[in-house]
Amino acid sequence: MKARIFVFKAMMVLLSAAFLDSCVEDTTIPTTDSAYVPVIYGTITDQNIRQGIQITSSRGYFDKKENARIADALVVLCEDSAAIHRTYILTQDSVGSGVYMTRDEMRGRPGWTYSLQVKMDFNHDGTVETYTAESKMPKKVDLDSLAIEKIKEGDYTMYAVNISAVDPKDENYYFGKYSINGKLYNAISKYILFDDMSLNGQKIRGLTIHYFFDKTDKDQFSDDDAKDMIFMSSGDKITLQVSNINKDYWDFISDCINQENGSNPMFGGPATNISTNISNGARGFFTAYCVSSASATAPAE
Image 1 (tube, rainbow, N blue to C red):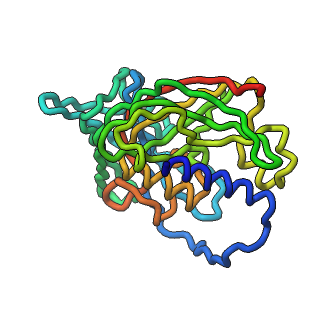
Image 2 (cartoon, rainbow, N blue to C red):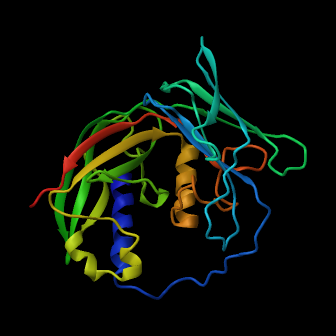
Image 3 (cartoon, rainbow, N blue to C red):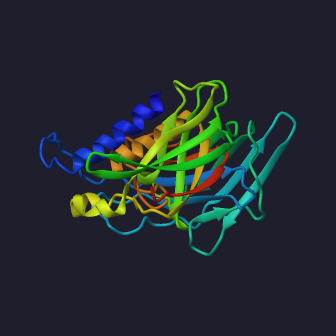
C-alpha cells in the first residue's frame, strides 16, 4: 500500500537521523529579502463554527518577529451550490488581530464552492488591490475507528496510528491533525499526509498512517532532533482529525514541510516557491474541507 510505504519511509528517515550527522548535500539558500507580499491563509470546514481568515505581511528571511498583521482589509466570503448563493462580510475578531471571521457560526457543505475576495491597499500607495481564491469542498470521509498499536523496531518502541474508514471512489488526498492529552499540534510540520493511490474506493481496515516514538527513547536522539519530534507514552490519549482535501492544498502542505520544516502559514512567511492558490502575487492558501475525528488510548503492551 502506498500510504504504508510513505509512512515507513518517513519512519526510517527519523530512525536514520539518530545515527547520521553527515552525508548531507551542500546547499546554498538565497537569503536576500524580497519585497513584502500579503500572506492570506484560511480554511472553511463543515464544523458549525465562526469561520476565519488571517491576513498578514510576509517577513524578511532573518526576521524573527511575528508577521505584521493586516487590519484594514475588506474580506468577503461567498458560498455557492447549484441553487444557492450566499455572501458573508468577515470582520476582525478583535481590533488589529488580522483575523477576519464570519459574524455567526456557519458550516461548509461538501460539493459546494467557496470563494474568497480580499481588498486592501497593501502597499499604501493609494491603490486598492484585490486578491481572490476559490475552493470546492470534497466529500467527507468518516473515520470508523482509530487504534494505537505498540510495536518494537530494533532498539526503539513505537506507537503506530491505525485508522479504519471507507475510501470514496476517485483520487483522494488526506491530511491529519492530532492532539495528545488535549494538546493540539497545529504546525504544518506535525501534519500527517497520505493518499489513496492503492486503496481507491476500498474499505480501509487498520491502515497505519503515522508513527510516534516512545518517550522513554527520547534520550537516544540528539537534542536538535528531539525538540522537533512528538513522543508518546502508554496511557496517552490521542484525538485524530482526518480530512479529505484538494490536491492543491495537499501540495501546499507538502511544500511547506519540505521548504520551511513546517512553519504554520498563519504565523510564518511562506517562501516564494511554495505553491499558493491566492491571486495577484499574494502567498498562503484558502481551502475548504470536512473534518472527521476519532480518539484512542496508547496501550501498555
